[in-house]
Length: 113
Image (cartoon, rainbow, N blue to C red):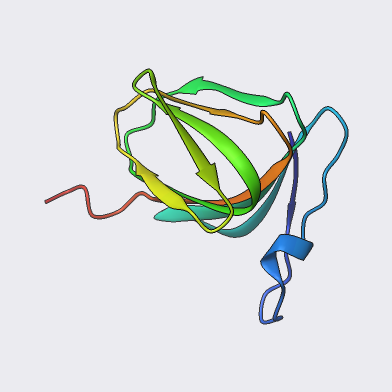
């Protein structure tokens, strides 16, 4: 996965700040703090993020194309403009059956209560 940060205090059109790379998942960090992270990502057709489980909720927003999000072995197909929360401690897979771009937000604080 290729990763680079974007410039602070600069207005951007999110879908335009990341390009597709052949046979790759590309990730650009928007915010990276100990309390959470926001990435914009592009997936070429056929690419997959391996199955993972993290101890935090993740908010996925599709900003271009269609994505397959598998949560606890249940497949969800999301289109441009749709979003969903992947629950903490739940296995998930992100698949590109076609090219797509998304914003992934993970908040690591607030789990203490």
